[in-house]
Length: 170
Image 1 (cartoon, rainbow, N blue to C red):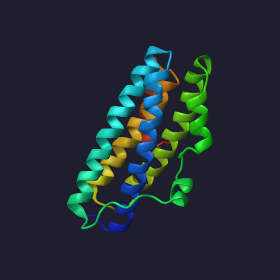
Image 2 (cartoon, rainbow, N blue to C red):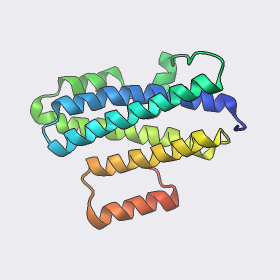
Image 3 (cartoon, rainbow, N blue to C red):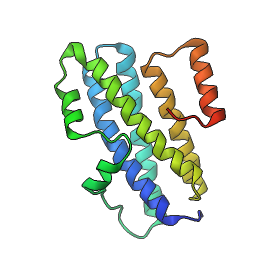
């Protein structure tokens, strides 16, 4: 339905790949976080990103007459917020006392990249359903960044409103 089928395909492939890495990192959070708040948030991240990937995969099957190609190593390297192998190893090998801080730092980088990708799709000329989902992903991931930073009360409401009305990206 959109005017840019090729951009839709690129966005879906890239976000599916980006989410797969996010799920991998979030699963580490579920297993290793010592802060119960962070552990619960990581479980939410696994569930939401896995659900979004299922939607992308179902749409791909309905909209395009080919299998979803995997992203190349160069595409992964060029994706905003896609973590390097060294960064993923840092999370995997972090001591118990270091893990929560490293996880929060790396997931914030990862989420900020996803927000930039979703922002591009939201502002594009693709399928309206995909653009609406991109908008939802933007706000979901910005909200999770705020939760990881422990933003609460009026500051949380203020950040959310600023992000919503100003299309502010982290």
